[in-house]
Length: 348
Ligand SMILES: N[C@@H](CCC(=O)N[C@@H](CS)C(=O)NCC(=O)O)C(=O)O
Image 1 (tube, rainbow, N blue to C red):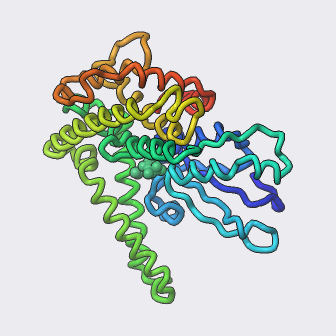
Image 2: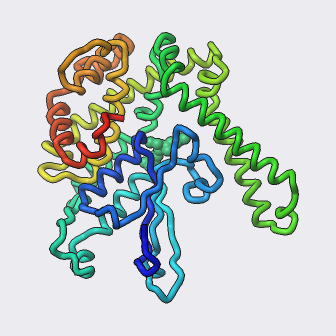
Image 3: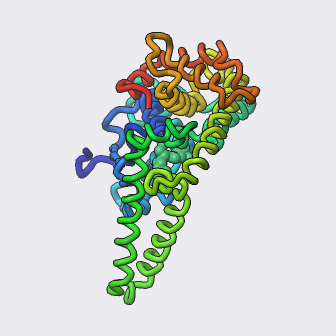
């Protein structure tokens, strides 16, 4: 909550179960931001709230996280504040890193408060390594969100249909159709659009957005809404491809991480992107049939078993499972208080 005379704040749009919204949540803790530094708004992905026209005005991709920040030159009390929206976890983390540094804290008279560690790599070599790791975990071929909705077999797909993946895809599909119908009916009414060409153009672009989005989700809706057997076979094939991508990304992590953290002794931006990716991969792995009834052991063992599944038998990067180097790295990441807070209710 901000009082009338408080300086304008940033707003983080987030959702607890989201992979990539976890990255700024981790960063806020690592950087020592307080609850008063920014407002937080929840966008319920399970209800498809990210597809509402009002959210699309903030983030035209309809994804979380989004960070809406006041533009520095407009933050004095004499002018009305303008805002800009950062629409992906990479730019949000870079912004959060830069916006709480020692100089800023000193200027605000908060020099003695919690120190703000620098998360950006300090060298060109470090930046190249960091960028390579971030690219690998954001690669579409190893998409952790697809992994949750995918299925390696028709049996796994049946279980998904009864669980969260089925609910998620069906709700999203219904939300897209509902918003699309609302936009269509507002243009059919012809009221404001006749007098306001700007809103006519906005309605046309929204119509196109919903059309394109529904099309891009076609495979998932054919599988989960229409129960198409042909689409199910395609999903199974695509899921095997993404698991192969997971093995490839793990190889990049294995080779790229110095230890104990990505770039060495200090936690950095790259770690804050790897954590959400690995957390989701492990969460999905733990629900796979080969991990049912497995007692004790480490959560990373679930991924080890998933990599040794016969569907990856011919994949060179999967056969040896999770390396001891990646296991040690995961243990370092998990030891952070930020990890324990963001994943207090379990991996997601
Ligand atoms: N490149 C974006 C990806 C964001 C993203 O895909 N977010 C997911 C949640 S983890 C989302 O909002 N998905 C909504 C959807 O696709 O409907 C980032 O790094 O922020």
